[in-house]
Each structure stands twice: as structure tokens, then as C-alpha cells.
Length: 281
Image (cartoon, rainbow, N blue to C red):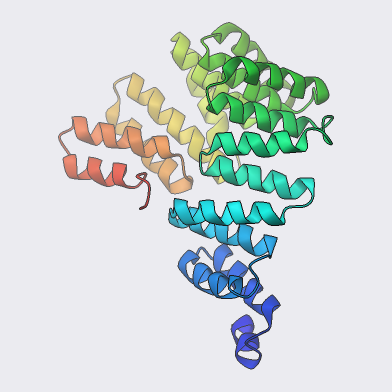
């Protein structure tokens, strides 16, 4: 309200317009944020923070082409490494991993000793299908930052997807013991599913469900749902998928929930679940 009053008193007060856009964004009123931000962008098109803010609004609304245009324009204004890091992560959000890799490579000459640059490049290369190159980059990131649990988890997830279950399990187990990191717990659960170790899964799920972070709780309920599903207990599985959806956004919970409805001949409910995770056009 006060930002709106400020603009009413002085329509050219750009700081008030930016802060109003930011406020709309944090209030999840993305269409209003876009309307205000685009009006400001017409007179401040070289404002990096505004372009990145508009990018996030477009991405939330599912306007991929506009988001792409905003992030491309932001590149022209990027100067420092943190700018390029945000832009690279923006491309990752759009699943444009080739573009993300290009941004990380741009940082390498001057930031070769920064593990997050190598990790970001490795993840983008992996998503692009350049698996061998990605693995070597993950390893190098770990040599620069041995105690970073997220980097170790990324490397272990890659090993898991390659079918190297035993080695990935050891890494996830070490990270979970040292840090209690939820990504490591999720990795142990996924590895146990693939190896048929169903008896090990439920205690790991309970750890995630009991976490204070609702997004981690959502992950825990999702895996608990899958565990009940593997036992043929569809009602309990559906309950946990619903709890996952209430706690946070785990798209797979909608997928599996829809499958249960579909197999129960509840096609309308299945459609509603699947529609919730379809890209917005």
C-alpha cells in the first residue's frame, strides 16, 4: 500500500516501482508483479536486478519464451561472477543446460579454484548427456571442497543413475552420517528401491517426514507413498502422496497419485492430479 502511495505521489520514483514489483513477487501475485515490472522495464531496460526479477515472475507463470528473453537480456548487463551465477541458474530453471554450461565456462578462467563453478558446469553437462566429462568435473569440484555435502550428493546421484549402486550407497551413507543431509537420505532411499532393499526404506522416510522443513517433509511423504505402493497398500500410499502435495511441491507425488487414481478407474481424479504438473502455456 505504501509503495502504491509513493508511486501515486511520484510516478517516476523507480525505487518504489521496483520494490512494489518485488513485493508482488514475494506475495506470489506474479501477474501484478509482471505488470508493474514491465512498466518499469520500459524506462530501465538495463537494470539487471529488474530483469532477473521479471525472469523469475515469467518462470513462475510458465511463460518460458518471455523468461528466456529476460535472461538473455540480463546477460548483457552481467559484470561480476555472482551475476553470471544467477543467470546460469536461471538457464537451469528453464532446462536450458547448454546455455547454463556456457555461463559456467565463462567464469572458469578467473574462478578456477571455486568449487561451485565446477559443480554447476558438471551438473549442466550431465543434463546435456555429456556424462564422462560431467563425472570428471564433479570429481574436481569435490577435490576443491571435500566437505560440501551437496557436491558429494550430486556425484552420488550421477553414479546411481549409471547403475553403480554400491558406490553411490557408500557416498550417500557417509554424507548422511556426517551431515544428516536430506539429499543423502533421499539418495539412500532411491538406491534401496533400485536394489530391492524395501526393509531399509521406511526408517529413512520417517527421518524426512520428521524434518522441520516442510519441503523436506513433502519429500518424505512422497517416498513413504512409494513404499506403501510397492507393498500394494494403495490407500495409505494415496494418503501420503496427498500429504506430500500439501507440504510442498514434489511433482512426482502428483504423478504417482494420478497413477493410483487411474488404476482405480477414477479417471477424472487422475486427470486433475496430472494437470497440476503440466507446463503452463
